[in-house]
Length: 168
Image (tube, rainbow, N blue to C red; front, side):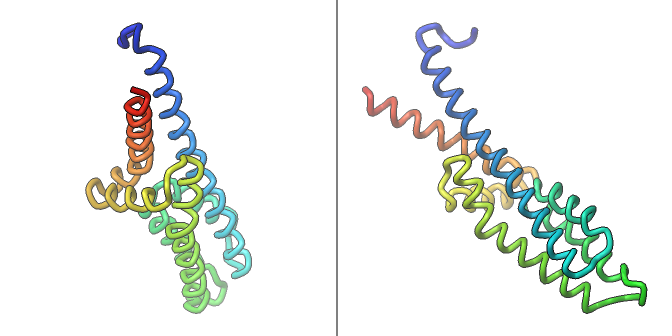
């Protein structure tokens, strides 16, 4: 009702495009969470860490939060690997699990996140990385959370306006 009747068709088109981009961001992020959980479970299972499934689920859920979620989920995983052995402190197992987790996070941050989220939201992977860097440096945790959705909306608005200008 706030949009003038003459502009409603264009507004509805823009709203659909923004919605499609945001759906892609959410779908991509949930895919990243699932991949993170599966890779974490595989590593913890191979290392024979107790509570592998629970810790992998925690890692998957925490990866919803870019950057900080990965760091926060690593702490209990490495602690369980360090002290979960019946023989006391197992530094070798703890370091092995830490290396596995770091590998997953490097793969996720540098390859999977830009590619999967970028493809799902139709945003170039470089734009995803740039948005995450800018969001995290300017807004911390909240900035990192909203960076890619904001980039998706800005890109959609830009492309929509460019198409409208070209039509005129």
